[in-house]
Length: 443
Image (cartoon, rainbow, N blue to C red; front, side, top):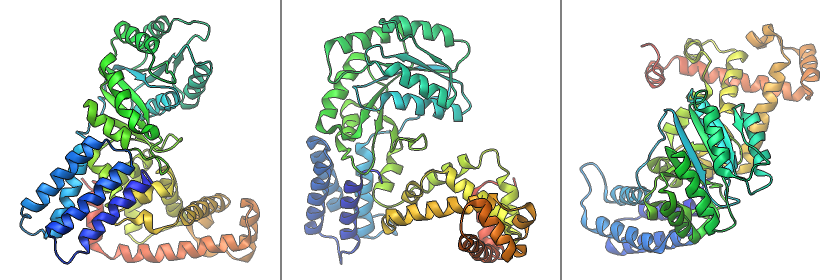
């Protein structure tokens, strides 16, 4: 999960409030100390930590809870609100014709992020293109070229040219009519050097980009603040992309750097794959961090995974009590399209991901993958009516899928269990109505 250590510490603090007999000044001061310790250990800026803890303590001791909310619930809500506030306002990039300039030091994941950004805009229906403006790192040109080929977007670069401004200008001229979003990858350095600032400023002046996004590794620590300020002073960055924000990163330094320079975090990367990239929303991020879940993101991922499929038709068939292996295959296909189960579990409320071991989720993911292989080896008749699958058919299906007979039997058992559950669902009119409303069916 994103920021595992910080999340676990803060969840422990909230549990202390939830389990308290009553909320008094002693408890609040103890909770504030716990929060300070957790944030400082995660490399959050000291000044921000002090400001945050003062606000939490003042509000928790002075504010009266709203009607219908207990003192414990109110104290937890204050912690949540103030954590959201230090991350600033959320901001999404416009879906319009634009030029985006990517900046950052070496090793921050800048070039990889260019590819993820191209995929993001492509999914939104726009036509992105990539320009290789890094003329100093030998592998940068080839890396971006391979990424462009993989994500199937136009690419421009010249690995023999050493004038970055010239390359970027030529790329912009090439793509100005054929592409909607032109993403420019620029050079980095191992540290902030004058020639980096000069080249970056020259590209900025020559291209006048609509967006200037600073890419920062979440593990950069306390150096994040000064780095962000230097880039901001040079080109006035319009947003920050945090990369590698997984369980191994403290992340607090990079998160607080955004607050220090007043630039919003627009995207976060939580892994190497394209699905490990999402728009940043402070409220959703803190909700997941505290184990409160993120149902909105979960539904968005489900909707994205269902694109191009007749979800309404499938839902109506299931609600009528009819459920075949074709329907189950579609469910598994959708779940697979939403990314790793661990990421999906993070979005469920009640700290669901913390209750399951990584090995359990990996085993479940592998099993679902195996089930799909088995179903790929079945005939249409067998998929529509699994009751016809007997001994001889089980052997044939197992051979075709490269699995054992017991795996096929396990799939059939899982299907029977799922079908019974769906049958119970089909008789619940209230639940049906809520689902139809949620997915906006029957308009």
